[in-house]
Structure formats: C-alpha cells, structure tokens
Image (cartoon, rainbow, N blue to C red; front, side, top):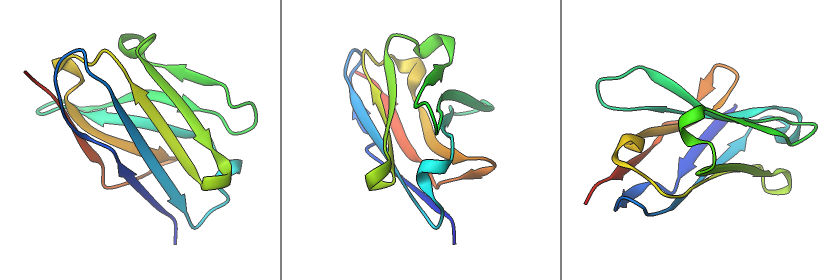
Length: 112
C-alpha cells in the first residue's frame, strides 16, 4: 500500500524557518518525482515545488523561490522542504504528493 506521511509543521513567527519531511512507503521512492503542494484557508490547492527522480533537479513556484529548498534522501525514502523567511502568506496545510496521491498533510502557521 502506497503511503505518504508528512511531518515538521508548526507555528512560527514571520521570518522564521521550518523543515518539513515526507516519508514514502509502498513504492520504489527513488524512481518517482515528488512534490510539495499546499492549501491555504479558503483557497485552492497550490503547487509549491517538485524534485525529480533521476537528476534530483528541482522547480519552484515563484513566490517561494529563494526561500524554500526541496531535497530528498532516497536511502531514507524521505523528501524535505526547508522553508526560510516565512511570511503569513505561507500559512497553509502542506502536503507531499506522488502523482495524484497526497499524504494527510502538516499544518504550517506563520503568525506573530
């Protein structure tokens, strides 16, 4: 059974940092591109970043470029999202995604 489980969310002040993790199981993790998406209150699901399987190269949504860094450790079946210089606009539930499958999500709240 394919599963994705996120962790690392929390409450942080503007300008702060968080590191999200996503552990995948039930599939060969290293073979798949993985992504982070987020959903803010009252808004649609928004793509944040993707990391590709073969090259490990990454792409980012414009508003997070230069602040967020996606990475993966295939030996640990884990993907990460390092988020720096957070703003209230980053408040959302963050999900990792493999194809159309998402995990349960982790809440990130940026507030003073």
